[in-house]
Image 1 (cartoon, rainbow, N blue to C red):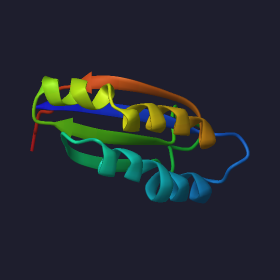
Image 2: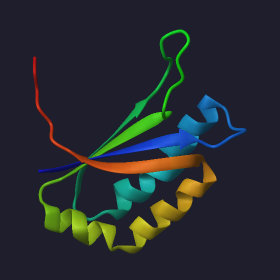
Image 3: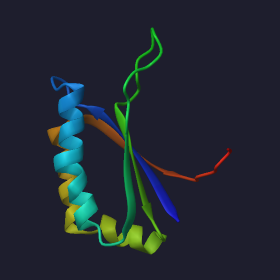
Image 4: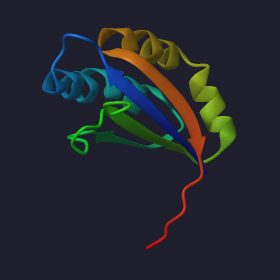
Length: 105
């Protein structure tokens, strides 16, 4: 399985609620409905951090594919370009990480 984490930082001037609403109602459907091989798409939103600290990002998307070929095909698709271009509408920064998932408990 291919597992990707994409961290996002909200754009200056938009609230946490606006960020969440845009991501879930406008941005996420681009991949959800457009990536042919996508197996799963989950969003983790930062709601608070320990006192005196700043969050390095405002949310993480966890996307999964059954295999790398499906991921590669989806990343070459028109919806991938649309999703990347759309990030400008609600983020000030983002990054993509390939991760290995291990259950500890």
